[in-house]
Figure: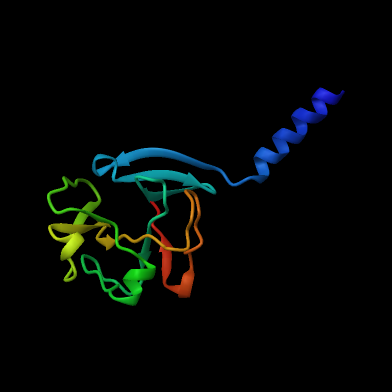
Length: 137
């Protein structure tokens, strides 16, 4: 009886916990697909959630200065091979550590991280300001 109770409890715990599973790799592993809460979202190589911003335009990043500190762009080397729905976007601040780099875009929308996400699977930036959203496949 105790074993069945323990198994039932473990199963219930598994259903209540947020699932986070890595799936496909893109851009040589720089971008990954992950399953979170029944959605396929994009993450960086470390499993950190990627976001899109309503105030950008397709192929244009408008998040600079304070915005880019809170929402760091998903930087990659300018010669990174892209395919499918992925493209690279130029930025005017691609200097210093980001010289010869571009940011990744999915379906034309530039991708960003959120500084308040602290571990893989965090999605605390989703809906922030009504303009930030998960990058969903």
